[in-house]
Length: 329
Length: 218
Image 1: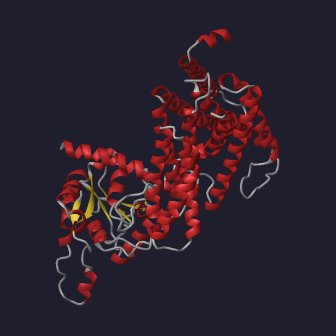
Image 2: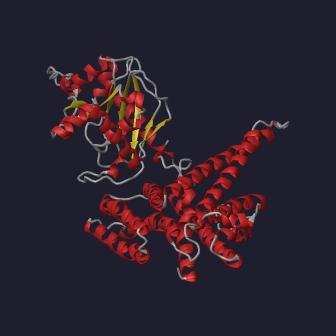
């Protein structure tokens, strides 16, 4: 089996990976579909059961969409993947800005963020100019944005407004741009297989989030920082970290890492991802909304994309730079 | 016309990309009956927003009003307004308030004249979208409604009056800017209202305004 897998070309291996994921998803979907027909004797239990099932169905739908999107991105090549993540970044930033109050004086800075910074950042990624793309936003943009805002002649809440915009750019543009950047890292003996690295990162971060969510529900312990997150506490967080790291380590055969390295990398990614999720939660609480999406403040029409990708936004840059620094690629 | 249709598609794509153009039908379903939508007015592109938020089937039978001084400025604007949006031109400022005229005892200077294009559209069976504030507000709080809505409601008692709240548009393109910024906007449609038997002009207009404002926090 192992020998046969090794004999395949990188493209075939990635295709096989997608086939496996699609197969797994199809199996789970069929299972939930069948379970939907089941009727509990106790009507009260039945209602709760159906509600749980609806929740699972919602999760499954998002997962399906994400996997299909990843598959299309991979099938059409790295350039397309970069464009895809640029679009995701655009929509995420749109959501972020919608829910952060801006003033008239911010108009020019916002134009700069959406139509200059975002395209340039992703072009830099697409052309693999790693040195420049790492410093472009923290150095040049963070200097240019307040300048544009100051020229707008509106001093009220000046630092707050700029901080908000810079944070939005940092999370939605800088963070997300590191996901396609992974595709362009060239490890020795790993050509054409960088898609596995993206899969590794996404799988680890998602596993961590999911396990942490389930563990928090099962353990029912008091929240550590209830004003920010009603579910976050250290024990379920630890469970999430542990499971995600082990999952990452078990996937070491698809990465350029050895078992221990994969474990460490998975741990780094999940710590960054889960903490990032917590940070974005604090931001949401500050705005007085439970979600970036519809359920909280329907009036904006946001669809909650940022809720899905916030962990990835934080994990991607840290993962990327850890990998680059440690392996010197 | 093919060019108009193509541009309509293109524009719809751009508006959706920038603002999401989400329609929220909280008070009534989208339905092909004769309606008068009345909405708050904060930006010239309110017209574009509400046009984009309507479903395809309703878009072709619903005609927004457009201020002539802005939307007829250039041949290009005139073309897009009439061919793509199927808008009705009105003079800014709305109808003169007939109450003021009658109190002084003088005959009103034909209060229906500015409304005539809207009356024509309603008579031909189309739905219309109006902005009863007349001019764009600066504060976010809608201004007092002009009386055109009341006049139309009385002339066409069968038309359903649907309040609508257009959210966030002023942030997309504030006065004086030309490049729009991507910010999510939505149009919320509320429960239809009607002129109660014997209801006076001012109470009705205030009630209509309240119905629009109430949608802000739904």
